[in-house]
Amino acid sequence: MRRLVMTMAMSAFAGGTALAAAPYVGTWSSERLNCSAAADVQRQTVFTVDQSALSLPQFGCEHATFHKSATGWVVHASQCYGADPSLAEPFSRVVHMVRHGVKVRFTWPGFDSGPLARC
Image (cartoon, rainbow, N blue to C red; front, side, top):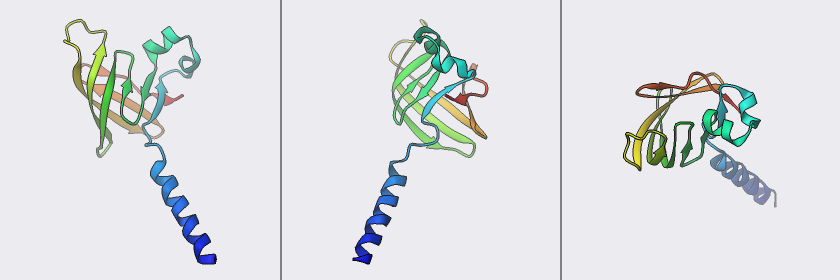
């Protein structure tokens, strides 16, 4: 009986860590007030990262794959739609996410979000 209880406890612990969200998943903003602002303000200021998608102020991507790098993550985003009329939609983009302590910074050519805190 004791062995069964230990096996169940170890399985629950292992399963719990496997299901834990990646550290980049969440909602991020440079100003925490934006996290609870009106929807139109949030669309312009809040970065939302899912396990497989991105919603950023400039664009949103239906698909995203994340690869760990030395300083954060490289995101290969596809099926993206955004406010840039010069881009044919859907488009793809490589986004770099760099971690600075508890803050995250999103960059791609021509853009730097600056440090963002979790909402």
